[in-house]
Amino acid sequence: MPNVETFTPANTMTPVGPYSHVAKTGQFIAIGATAGVNPATGEMAGPDIGSQTNQIIDAFDLMLASAGSDLDHIIHINIFLKDMVDFHAMNDAYVERMGKRRPARTAISVTDLPKPGALLTMNLTAVTND
Image (cartoon, rainbow, N blue to C red):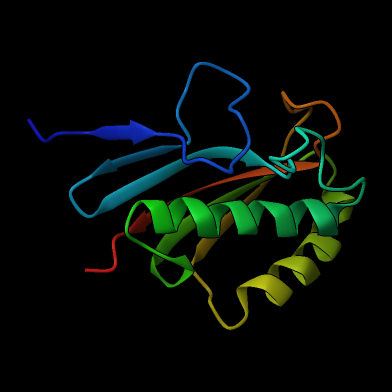
């Protein structure tokens, strides 16, 4: 059976439940649901979808680096939006931060999210740089 390493890197938000942000086995990396929380304060990075989207991608960048990867090695991202009205504004922030990167992606509308004030969460799968 392959070894699965789980961890939550320093300088990332504290998980809102009993889980680690990152799970890694071999070259495969999974990052669990991440909200746009400023890890220094524990508060939302901002009240708008753009600031929360940017914070999530910043967190992904840090988490991927801690697992030996980066934004260029993302395979798939799931986006869970509380209100699909925010889809276009989220895309604007996403493109600004992700540049020309276009991993596979799914956007889903949800009724609610565990973190109060969160307008969206994202999770992803990626591979290591090697």
